[in-house]
Amino acid sequence: MPAKTAKRSYNSSRRTLQAAQTREEVLRAGTKLFSESGWAGTTLVAIAEEAGVSVETIYKGFGSKKALLREAMDVAIAGDTEPIPYVERPEFAALGEGTLEQRIAQGMANVAAAHERSAGLWQAIVEAASSDEEVDRWRLELEAGRRVDVGKSVEVVLGRPVDDGVATLLWALYSPETYQKLVVDSGFSRADYEGLLAEASRRLTGI
Image (cartoon, rainbow, N blue to C red; front, side):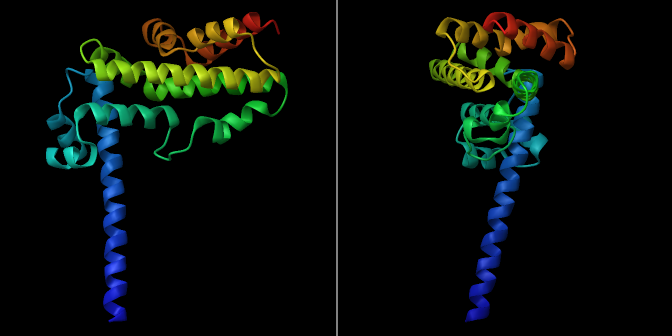
């Protein structure tokens, strides 16, 4: 009996690991295809083929194409599948370390990294939101959360409260739309993009 129990435990652990790996493969495939082909141009059949799974597996794991897009966006912004809020992550803590210039540089690197991972997915969300009220609510929720994170991040970098009007301007400056215009449309390198954000941030905050 003990041997059988151990075997069941092993098999259960293996199945759990396999399910997690499958989920990550679907998320990677969804991220790739939504970013390349947009919302309308991406089908669950294509995602399933890219991930090497069945469409039924995607439905079982995510429920719908919309839910897959939302989770892919959450993962892309965070950089992993761990359910850890931004303000509890090492990259947020790093905003309060080092000299002011080092903290500013860290902040701009955080912004750039998040947009590098999620810019294509954001475009797919905007596309879907134009005809789907639920996705549009998600879009607004994501932006509201980003607004809060920007305010907290800037205050950590500067070591003082920030005027709400300035925080709002920085929220717009650090937006995925600005990233799209500068990096994707205008061909800015990541270094140039971060440098421009840093200079604009200094001017807006008076440092």
